[in-house]
Amino acid sequence: MPDSLTPLKKLRISRGLSQAAVANAIGLEQPTYSRIENGFGCLAQNTEKIAKHLGSAITEEMILYPDRYTDYEVGQR
Image 1 (cartoon, rainbow, N blue to C red):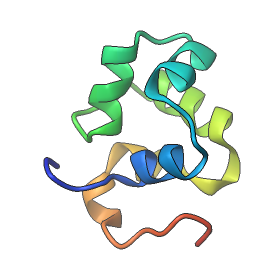
Image 2 (image 1 turned 30 degrees about the horizontal axis):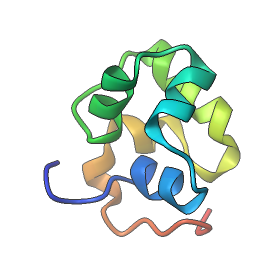
Image 3 (image 1 turned 120 degrees about the horizontal axis):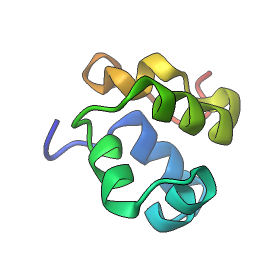
C-alpha cells in the first residue's frame, strides 16, 4: 500500500503520536511498527496489541487489510 495513508497511520498522525511512541507502548521495535503501519503485514498478536492500545477508533481488520479502508477518516467509527 505504498504512497497512501493507511487507517493506522491516519489515526496515529491525528493523535500527534510518533511511530516510536506507539511502538514502545506496545512493545515493538519502531521498524516493525512502521512496516505494519504502512500495510506490509502484521502478526495477529501485534494487531491485537495495536488495536487495544489505540482504542475503538480502529479495528484489527483495518490494520490487517488497510487496502479495504482507503476512504477511512479518523473519527468515523
